[in-house]
Image 1 (cartoon, rainbow, N blue to C red):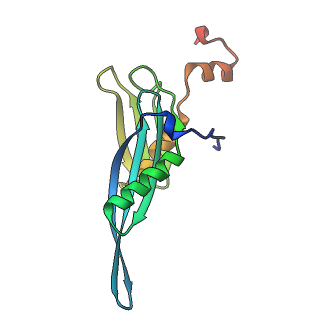
Image 2: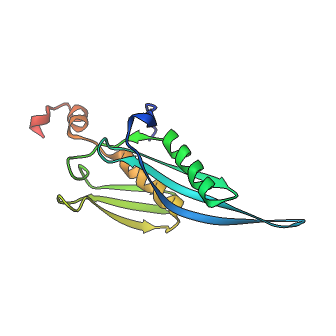
Image 3: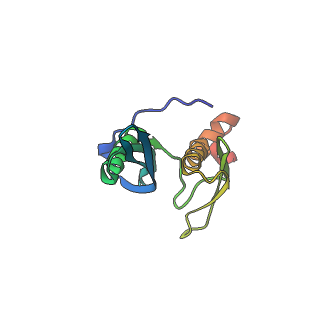
Length: 151
């Protein structure tokens, strides 16, 4: 399912970043081993329902994280949320990774269950696939050709 995404400006939001995974990568060359780091980062603003993820690679961890944050800010998109949770249950898939998202009562937020691959990259991409699939009542009503009150 391909969607046209509207480019969101990262400067408009109060984004918070969270490092998901840091991987040490070693490349063996003639003179020895070259070490570098890869960071997987998620950024988002819960108040406005905007999230994004990115990956950065560098010789040192802080630089890899900074590059990951910059990459994540370029890949922002809006998520349909209710006041305290998500509107409905959804299953996201990417590769062999599957993530089940369920709405939960106020104070709990979202219940997340990772099924399949534990690889952080696949889990993040499956989670974002699930978030893209979320629909609000207005969208569902227009798809069905009904008014929002009829749902």
